[in-house]
Image (cartoon, rainbow, N blue to C red):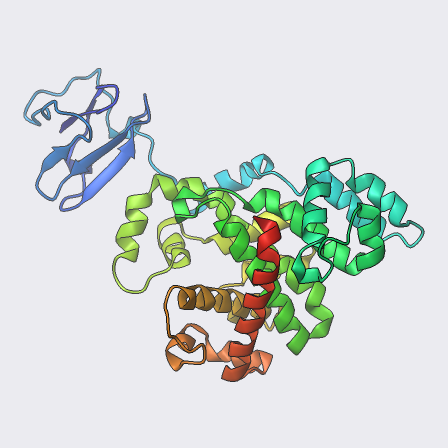
Length: 363
């Protein structure tokens, strides 16, 4: 069969034997990258945005026309994973000023003055820190006038949390067309999961409060690397998710052979993030494979609670304790963390309150 690119009108010769019957296929033109679609359900070529007729497959093949072997196929499995790992260096890392600030806060000899000097070298980070520090969430609205003042009034523990939030916002405040996420969507979801993780940790394992917040904040970092590949195969994802209650991580595993949690794990290792956080990212959709990793269970539950809360906010008159909303949470996670249904409703309220307090200053 001969097909014509709707963009550059280049002709390609594809042997019929290599074409799957009874379905639609699509691939990018190797020359101009325009999307070429073929509808094999009716044995008809669907040249999008082109009014030119399809070329009959009975015409003699032209030896100078590229075959399907010359057409770039979307990668999947080990090949795609290898390509992603090779491209990790293209992903922006946490701003150096944030890393340096965390080192200073870990140095007992350093003080607020040294910390302020580092943070103030990045005007955007410094401004963001002041905005968050003055939010209603920390109860000091309008009282923090400088970075040095913030470190004195808030203390290093709280300030480190704010700095982490400020630094990660640069990474997560992206438009992700593959996941149908607008600018700010991933960021707000991640922040809600961070708050939820810390709240859950405080109730189940207080020693993990700090790590839980950080893990929740970056649990979906893998989506940044998978987004373009998902967008490239958008139709495949939509077709898979069309049947039953499928999720993006199910679709990722089915189409790519791995999901964004696994990709996020590789990113965290590349950034030399502590192994406990790496494991939480890796298993945040399936903590039951983590061999009893507390942090993985915490982030898993916080992520589910955030999704439930988002669902409830789109509906009116729904009681947060209704059993219909609990089907999403695996009972094994509830048992592991020693939580009951009434605890979930309470956590949901606390996460909602935390987000409402800080939302105004994040806009």
